[in-house]
Length: 444
Image 1 (cartoon, rainbow, N blue to C red):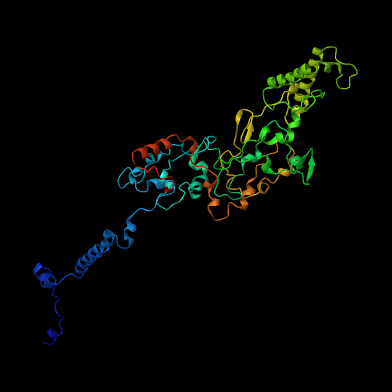
Image 2: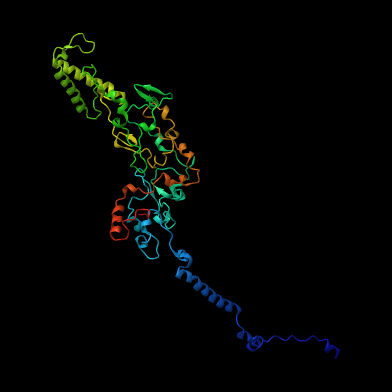
């Protein structure tokens, strides 16, 4: 018996049939509610109630709450479309397309200047840079990041471009103005230093030094106060009219200036007519010796030929050369009335800043010499007095204001090529889309 009691018990294997497993399950869980499902259902009803309550003020317009779902005010240029969304938003719930913009703004795309030959690798949509509904702002005043995102590595974003990389308007980050390396080849003899001496003095009745504004006058009708061309009649005649006097033998009795014109034939005719008139009024004048001669001319015809010929040579070879450069046989090299840089092949001239824009109106509170620092020392016409870039750094580049933005001096589009904007506005007014009494900016 003792041996049987010490015998180990036999292992009985667990039953794994379906019935055995089912006996271990608690079937009561089917009757108990699921906590997560209950919380989810209750949360849905709570959120739905909150949404309904929140919509009540919006529907009724209580406390100006409707503004939360309204679009923001348009920029100054588009204020006339404030209540006419469909003018720009041609598709419902869609962003403004480039086609909608080009209905009014049909100017050439970037680059703005015709001197640029580059082409962007990717087309940039208008709304990527010009973002509306941000208040009464100037839509064209863009952040520099819109420009430098491509121009910091121009070769990677364009083909055929001949401009240097620009990452900011700062030293070493923006190329120097090309204008300071371009010659001023206009055939004139202009000496700024002679007109602006360091010490005041009076010369031939003229009080010196002169002020910059005595000759360089801005165009009041220009939005940027562009400088008017310097002309003899307007700016030089009051002091230099005697440079046109031709009566070398002083037989006319009074100072007679020739007209300041490019028509040399007309000048010769006026000189001849003056002496013919004098001879008709005083026939005995031919008996008087001319200049240092001891004997008079043998005849009236000889006298007339001499005084006319000598006066013409005196005027064209000497007097005109006081201000103008002359070629062979005293021929005066002509200069057109131009604004900007003189280019012989371009009668209309060329802008000094090929890619930039400058406004004298915006700088009217600044003394001319604070930028044109070399004016008083300049003795030759070919000395270019366009300020270097360092002159601009006093106010631009690190001010932390819009004065530092690329858009202050550069155009993205060439607005001079726009043709349809005025027509499009007239059409919108005719259709009643725009109130004719509303001006740009939204004011009557």
